[in-house]
Image 1 (cartoon, rainbow, N blue to C red):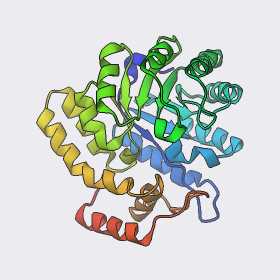
Image 2 (image 1 turned 120 degrees about the vertical axis):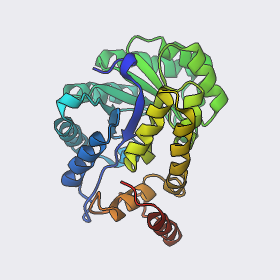
Image 3 (image 1 turned 135 degrees about the vertical axis):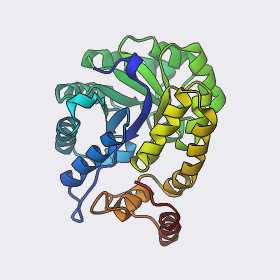
Length: 296
């Protein structure tokens, strides 16, 4: 089980590769995991938004968790975190319990979306997750969920024993800094472009889709910062900015899958509807990025 003391560093929400027929490509998935853990990442997230969680079937999710659990060498101690959130509390509890039974070390649970519950409803949603007996990371991303969490709501959720940290994706550095100051549990950056700035504001690390690529450099940003080599940390991060900006130039994970395929890390950049492949304009930008930077 993952604890708040070990919730830190660079955690990667892995893509879910599909073959050209639209089926999960488990061979590519295992190769992605092997490459990521070899780069020194501090955690792996399966079934996040980057993994196209809305279109992953229940049986596929089970197989993805089992495959990831088997693919992560036990000696490395890289925690396996599974995205289990939904806007149905009962379903979220069941999926979180299932993730535990399949070997997950923690669950990443987004604020209930679309039905716009009250702040008290959100608190009770996270209270109910204690039943699953798996550590939970609260995921606050209001531009996707349509619900803005009040600071007192976050504090109430973070006081729960089974909640070990927060993925903060509001893009508000002032808010992140305030949360990092007032809470003992770790706050993680969920906005890739703000990763270095978030470390400066007290973040314990980040859950970063961009770190599917150039993973070792993202790890170096974190490790250099932790050893007080602030200027070096910033220098490395500045080198990563063009990659980050390209990966979010169109809806995630389309540019990411395209670039992973271009670099030979997955066999196809196939997505499932309603997500579609990147535009020709974006692919031209990506080609220029490849020509100017040979990353891994």
